[in-house]
Image (tube, rainbow, N blue to C red; front, side, top):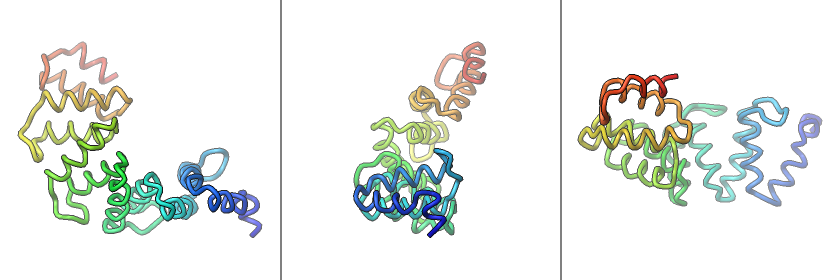
Length: 193
C-alpha cells in the first residue's frame, strides 16, 4: 500500500522475514517513535509479534508489557503472562522481571511473593535494574521476606547505579530516615537532588 511504502514497511517486512530479530528492533522504533517515525503502538505490536513468532525473548517481554498496560492492544493479564513466561523460559531478565511483577501483585495469577522473589532475583543477578528495584521494594516492605533494610539498601543501590529514578528516591528516603544505614541528611540530599 501507499502508506506501507511511505513508511518503508514493505522493505521492513521483507527484512523481518529474512532476519527475524530486526522485527523486534522495528517494534521498538514504532513503540517509541524513533528515527523520525510517529509513535504507532499497533505497528510496534505487529513487528513484536513477528519477532516473538521467531522466538525472540525481548519481543515476548515487550508484548507482555503491552498486554499488561493495554498499550496498542486490549489489556490482558493472561496474555501478558503467556509472553512473560515464554521470555523467562529463555532466561531473559526483563521477562523474568515482568513475571515477578505479575506474581508480586497477583495480576492474572494468585499473588505469590515467593515466586515473585525468585523471578526478581534471577533477573537482578543478571543486572536488571527494574528487578533490583523490585527486590529492594520487597525487602523494605517485608513482602515474602522479613523486613531487611540493609538488603533493601543494597538492591536500591544496585538499581540506582543504573539510573533508576525511584531507586534514587528510595535511597534518599532511607538515608534521611536512617533505614539500613546511618541517618545522613547530606547524603539524602544528594540522592534527592
